[in-house]
Image (cartoon, rainbow, N blue to C red):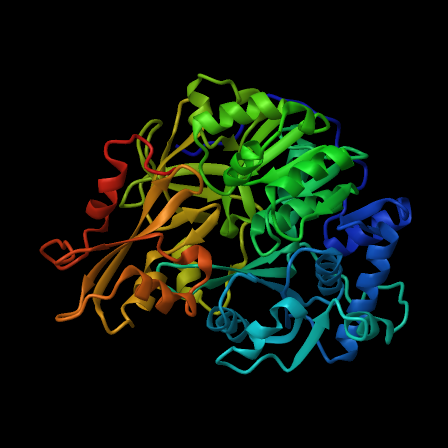
Length: 531
């Protein structure tokens, strides 16, 4: 069934003038509210006038360095005001920002820089060792962030400029975010400016306030900016002219303190972050008194955690569901649907205005309400392409529909329920992990003949990585040996939490691994095989 939304909540009328690109966003708010804080980070304040000025400097510095529209600019560092200055600097030059996950190992980060053909890299000193250890050559230009004679001098050398170098259109690419894949190598998802405007614009035009941004809001970003959720949430607040409170990295105690002490009004988090904040000693509902809305997503949430969060945070909750390929959120469980004890507490939500959802069978035929199949989404925020992978793009983006790889159904009222994964992704605290990448790494160990990776339920992180390994003949490495072997090859969140030695890998008559058979040992008869 192809479902479009029936809005049930109304908000303020659409504004007379709305920015359509990040260049327009920077210019608009620098003119209208130059002294309003755009970013608060570790006691530092960057106003909208400052964001406009510093991103102009970066734009002209990039141009002076020979960068041209379409060139890739990478950023390896944690969240700070500098990250957003670089983002808007890229927007003003038509270059494309490639945020690199700072948790990655040197080979993993090196692959992203090489695959994206990055020409200039901004890197924090804390992560310079990753660049130095890369097996591939670094980009031709590397700019150090956070140093007295590095980044500030690099910007200042080009003076103050009032104008952007280029004026992008909504279809101009602005970001390239890397997601893991079933082949083991991450793919670069190219997103245009429209990916960061389409949903909010559609809600405003339909007068739907499932997620809204109000004057004076202070928005906490718990999700890192190398994830589409973190980048999307930041840009929504910049577009609305509110204040972003940036965490260098998520720490539950710090997040609670910032919410209380700064009077934060909105937050975007993954379920594991909610759990960690609620588990902090001494935390009470009083700590969250200023919150009016919490947006959460990135991984499924248990009904128990959601119920507890509703009670303690005592504010409106909105769940978002989508992929990097959909430009982040395409489905929303609005605040009014958050009623403890009801079936809707297990739903992903319903499509925003302008977004459609359908469920198909193995032959591509649409299924009726209640039938489980692959979830497909049509959204104006969808990706442009997988960078350099036209065949993979064609597999995922078909006639305007993103094939999600998630299994679910739509109920008669248009609510989407996710029940399983068609693809083999494992979600560890909101991080996508694909088995193939870990299996490939494990099978390079001389003591391993074969490995199969599955996700198993974990009460804190949602899921954990479980490794089934067949030892090589005459050898049996210990879990400690395998852990040590993988540490240099994989980011920490991808490392197996448990190893289980088996004599053989189960296969069907054609030789295909029966991964589902191994995975189902942990999930049993659970109706929803995602945690």
